Image 1 (cartoon, rainbow, N blue to C red):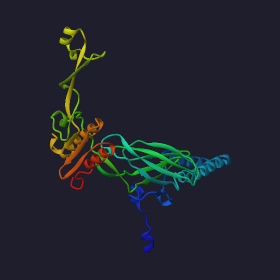
Image 2 (spheres, rainbow, N blue to C red):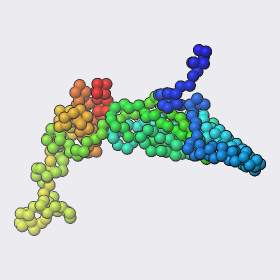
Image 3 (spheres, one colour):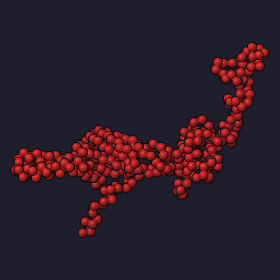
Image 4 (cartoon, helix red, strand yellow):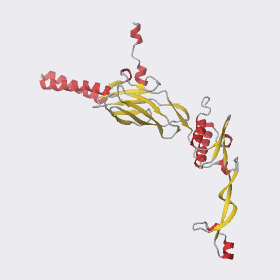
Length: 320
């Protein structure tokens, strides 16, 4: 009696799956579910009507057609179920993404030991279907689209795999939820300016660069030089065109500070900082990041950018 109670059906698994599991996730008999579709129920109802008609009229051909189609229906159950059975799912390849933007993750599907699979559909609760045929003895990779509404280290969404192959009379499905997370950066703000530069707030060694602030020297005129930069007095005296060169004072180091943000709440401040980091990287500046209780020294390059963005993504995630 106690053994029977222990092995009773778990309806939570039927509707929501088993919860997060380590990759790879093997689709065994207990993890694949199957039910008739609307077309399958209609087909079964028609078979029942055909059986009643055959009995009523004692029609041998009617019996033959009814039982032939019924056997086809039964065989379809096994083909549909086996189209998912024994697939190995994961691990996922999770690259950092930005919140509220079209993104996703790549997922390995291992079919290296079984037959060809056809019309496999993969989707999350809020995203579009991916239809894929899986060839025998191949390791396939699909890209699952997903939009993350918030920043942080976010667990991968639950993925549903389903198939209705070959005739659409039955639907076999499984839930895949892997124990993996994806790093999600804050959504960059729409502010395209660097307040640090415009306000002159910078640190480091000063350097001179081409600009329009201070006069530097004269040089021979070249085609395309702005007319307002031509030294007209010199042209009037010597009849020689010369162009004035100017410089501007810049700095080789910039600090992106939490205190410089103008937003009112934490998430908007992080969005501003995220945008400033991206702009500073595009301009190839050496920059540092100052957050409350966190300081990242000045540097440059993609590795430095990703490190700074990671700090924004994980900032106070335990308390927010």
